[in-house]
Length: 309
Image (cartoon, rainbow, N blue to C red; front, side, top):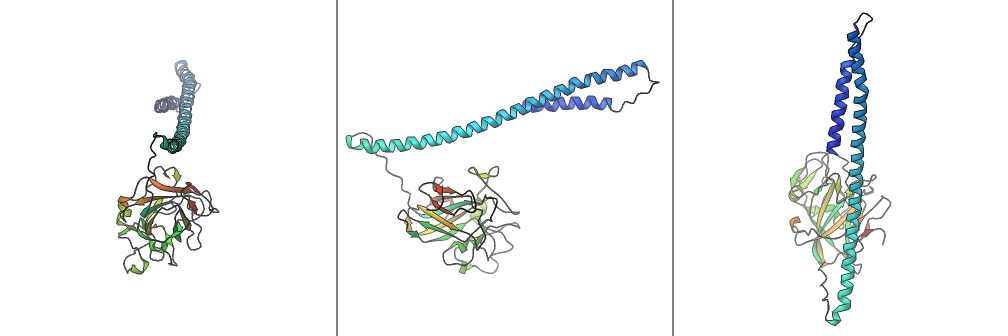
């Protein structure tokens, strides 16, 4: 594609250069035959140069189409490979269980998915709605609620829209930080601990929020579109919660932010060993997607899907 683009640029430049030689020429009936012949010669060269430029452009466009098709094929193959890997893992688990009694395959121990700390990463990629939340609730495999409190996070708006508002019982809501350059500070886990001077402007980022900011690559987080609606806003955000008891989080429910519809489009949960975000596991416990603001923000992490349960 690069070679084709260079060829088109060269052909277009050659045509433009030749055309620029012709355009300034003005003939009169008194000019010589030699001068008339020179103009005719230049004009006769112009169309072949135009054809070369047209052919080079077609070559460039064809190469771009091929590259786009190749990328689509790669994405499809990658998705198929991921599905195949999941199928193989499922079949192996079935074989291990079936063969264990005959001295065959020994079942692989199930990974420990319980956690005392969990990190919630969110993307607000919907066209409608805002980057705001009223609360985050966790449930175990039996459907019992697991009380939790926020202990670390990436960013927040101001004292009226802080991250600690995600804790149970607080009437405020969280709104993303934006508008001005961020003020760096330590996490405020309980809203009762907010002091004068903690907030300046409408963008407060924690120390680890600044050093470990959730980032979108080419406008996407793990393939999910990020939308920044304001200056200095992040494309995605994370919160770290401490659970009241060590448990397996099987379901997560998020609520809208104080009457504002949330533009939430993707959420994922990962386990951590402490309130330090660097202790969080890269392998997620589960995730969910949301296609429109009309859908509930209720995600069954065991099924890696979204929707009302």
